[in-house]
Amino acid sequence: MTHKNADFLSKTRWFEQRQFSEKWAKRNQLLLQLIKTAKLDHQQLNFSEYGCGPHQSFRQALTELGFSGVVHSLDMNQWHDNVIQIDLESADFDRVPQADVGVLSGVLEYLHRPEKVLTGLAAKHDFLLVSYRVFEYQPHGAMEKYTAEINARAANGWKTHLILPELLKVVDNFGFILAAESWRNQCLFLLKKH
Image (cartoon, rainbow, N blue to C red):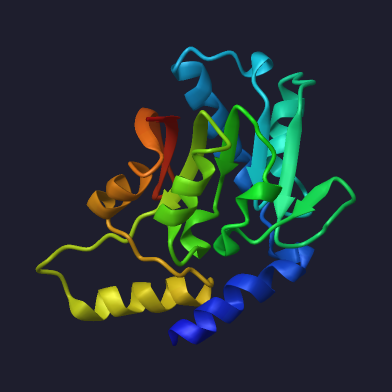
């Protein structure tokens, strides 16, 4: 699959609600657990959920915990009246509201330059919750396996194929890791701004 197709899919697949998985609620629960691990009180924080989708699943996870604070919902699509429409690739960070915590759950894979986005979000947030499914590359592995995985990632519309050391450099553009977890071959991080 070509890079052009990946770009097309990363934008068009999200126009249908059926593309959103209820399984992602578990990822959001684990991201919230990172806040507790770092001994932060989620009840005292406000949040911006990027790529909120039609279900605004991070907002739902907070609601289930009895959270009644501010959650800004941001997405490429205007799913509801409360969603701020934004394309993170355009670097139009003036439209992004200030919030203690930015949440990028299942978002970084779709960005051409995630490091640029994280650098831009540092002006808006003190903390970031992020997830990323790393590309599991071994230097002496079977090339067919790797091309098959790249094709599968591209079929999802993913634009980046970072291995763990590359991902760690990318998240350093925002700050340092306060807490980490894994879920379904994804790295979950709570980052604190430098």
